[in-house]
Amino acid sequence: MTPPRRHGTPDLVFTDDGPLLVRGPVVVELPDGSRVRSDRPVSALCLCRRTRRPPFCDTSHRRKVREGER
Amino acid sequence: MNRPELPAARGLLSEAVLAFLRGELLGLAVAEEAEAADPWGEDLQLALYCCYELHYRGFADVPDDLEWNPDLLGARAGMERAFLAALRAEVPDGDAAKSDAAKSDAAELADVIDALLVEPVDAHGVSHHLRRDGEVWQVREYVAHRSLYHLKEADPQAWVIARLDGPAKAALVTVEHDEYGGGDPARMHAHLFAEMMRSLDLDATYGAYLDAAPAPVLAEVNLMSLCGLHRSLRGALVGQFATVELTSSPGSDRIVRAMRRLGLPEQAVEFYAEHVEADAVHEQLVRRGVIAPMVAAEPELARDIVFGIRASTLLADRTDAMLLRSWGSGRSALRRPLADSPA
Ligand code: FES
Ligand SMILES: [Fe+2]
Ligand SMILES: [Fe+2]
Image 1 (spheres, chains in turn orange, yellow):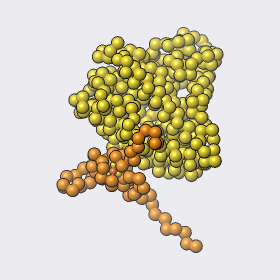
Image 2 (tube, protein in one colour; image 1 turned 135 degrees about the vertical axis):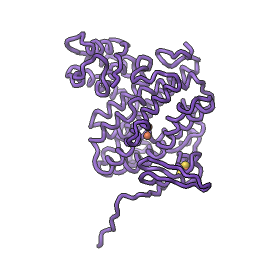
Image 3 (cartoon, chains in turn green, orange; image 1 turned 180 degrees about the vertical axis):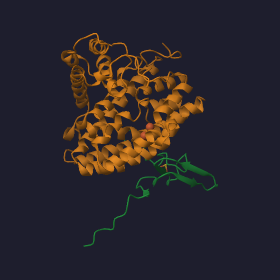
Image 4 (cartoon, chains in turn red, purple; image 1 turned 120 degrees about the vertical axis):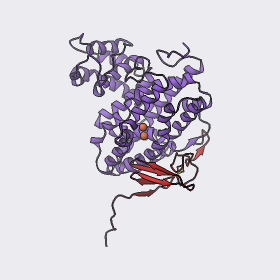
C-alpha cells in the first residue's frame, strides 16, 4: 500500500465549527475595497458572516443556548 | 525591573511567611498552620501567593535566592496540598464526575469543551452585569482585581512549554507569542492591560493592588502558578489555559460594550477589543493545536485537562459571585476600596 502523500503544515485550515485559519501575517481586502492587516502568527477569518469585526472571527458563530439546556 | 512591596499579613500563616521573607525568622515551620487554615481563606491564599511571587518577580528587599529556600518550599508544599485537596473536593475527579461512568476520558473532555463553546443568552456573570448596567467604579474595580493576573499575563503558562513536545508545544508557543505581542513590546497583552489601567486612572505598577485583592482573585492566580510549576499538573495547566482562551472572546466583547456605553477612553477599550479577536484565534489553536495532539500522545492527560477546566471554572465562578455579591449590596469588592468606590 502506498503511504498517504505528506504535505507540510497547512497554511489554511477550514474549521468544522467556524472560521478559516490562516497562517502568517495577512492583508485582507474587503468587498468595499478597504484593506485590513493582521500581524498575528495565525488569523481566524469569519466564514459565518455573523462577526461584528469583519473579516475576523469574533466567535459570533457559537451556538446560543438558554441556561439550563447546556 | 520593578519589584513589588511585600503585602500586609492576613493571619498567622501569612504573617509567618512574610516575617521569614523580611529576614526576621531563622526558619519557617508552618505545617500545622497550613493544615488548620481555611484553604479558600485570605490567610492561606495570600501566603501561597507570596511564595509563588518569588518565582515571578520577587519582592523589593527580599533576597532572590529565597525562591529555592527549602523552608519556604516546604511551607508552599503544605499550602498546595490544602488548596489542591479543597479543589478536588469541589471538583470530583474521574468516573465519579462523569454523567455516565462508562464514558471514556476523551469523550468526557470533548463534552466539557463543548459546554464552554456555547453562548448562554441569559447568563448573569460579571461581564453580563457590566455590559447591561455596570457603573464606572465597577469597571475600575474589575480591572484592579484582574490586574493580579493580567500584569503577568501568559507568564504562568510559559512554564508548561518545556513540558510539552511536538505539535502541542509549537501550537502553545504560537499562542504565547501572540500574548507577548508577536515581538512588539507595545502589543504585549500585559502592556495593553497596564495602558488600560493608566487610562482608567488606576495604578499600573506591578503588584499595586495585591493588598486590595481578596482571596478568590488570589486563588485564580494561585491555580495557574500551582499548575505551571508542577510538571505533574501540566494537563491541568493546559485545561486552565483552555478555559481562559475558550471563554474570553465573548466575555471581552461584553466588557468592550460596557466601556463604550460608559464613554470610557479608547485606550481603555483596546485591551478587551484585542482579546475579542485574539482569543477567537487562540481558542482554535488551543483546541486543535494543543489539546488534540496532547491527548493523542498521552491519553491519560485527558482527566487532568478536565480537572484544570473544572477547577478554573469553579474559581472564576467564585470570583464572579464575590464581585456581584459586593456590588449588589452597593459595597466595594476590594479590601481597600478605590477613591470612587462606595466604602
Ligand atoms: S466564523 Fe466565527 S464569527 Fe463567523
Ligand atoms: Fe491575552
Ligand atoms: Fe489569549
